[in-house]
Image (tube, rainbow, N blue to C red):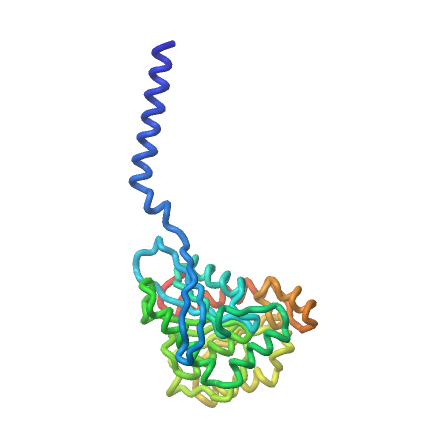
Length: 278
């Protein structure tokens, strides 16, 4: 009986030592995870903004950075979720704030007011977008030679306008974004590759606006990709779109197939833009 007890104790001790050694050998890898934090910043116009920065600390080298520009609802959980998804793919992602103080809402009337507060002065939107871009460039995990941007709805217009303005972006992807602009794209200015992901059933972006966008790109000799998804309404990538559409009596809706396919198409696009797979 005594010998059995001693043997059991010996095995238990050996197991404990093994665990200790494993913790020493693999502890740092086990602790590696997606890291996220809010970073306050200020635009050149003095507006106080807040961002959500996410990256995978298991990656020890610099990696491409991607800006995420929110829908007209503001910097909400959806924009943060997309930033987190990008971080899990191996990017450093920064969800930026275009309204100030991280304001967001679920009321269309309030969203419209906040959006027009930015749109009414073109310099305001670019000033705030540039502030977000500079903040992303300043993060130690980011390869500043490989920066892109994605935007949703209102944010889709913002990233397209960033490309039109010639900001130093390798590529931009617009999800169910507003396409109209007062400053047409020109090949001599645009540095970014452009991807537009559009819902064929989008009643908020009229067919005439789609035609005008394509004509703009052709006239400016600007290369672009335009992908349409059948039966997809405005807001097709957001699972909350059905509820928000009903509550606000607006024609938006979620489309799971378009959501999945557009995310895949975005990944293929950025893999090509950055010359590496994520």
